[in-house]
Image (cartoon, rainbow, N blue to C red; front, side, top):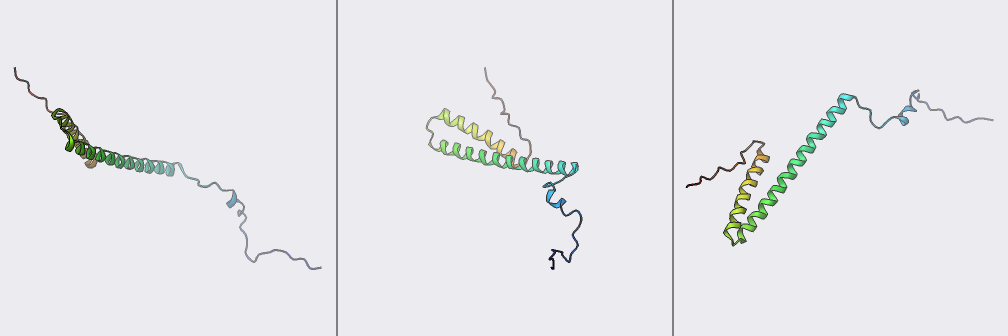
Length: 109
């Protein structure tokens, strides 16, 4: 009787079985630190973008409200808020620190 054997003309490397048991990704400590750093930077950029979008939306709403506001005191408060939020938005977009303090009003006696 003739026996059929499944022999391949190619040599199989002795560690072929290890390919199936390998972990998904082995990284060195340095590579892990680099990946963590890159992930943190990406997250910071995403958070900054969300912050800019939120500030822009708030400013748009403030401006709309200012168009319809009839009371002077409320309009004055909205204008002040718009100025402050505008400075914050500019600071976020440029990365430069801008003074958010208002000059103190002089009181006369």
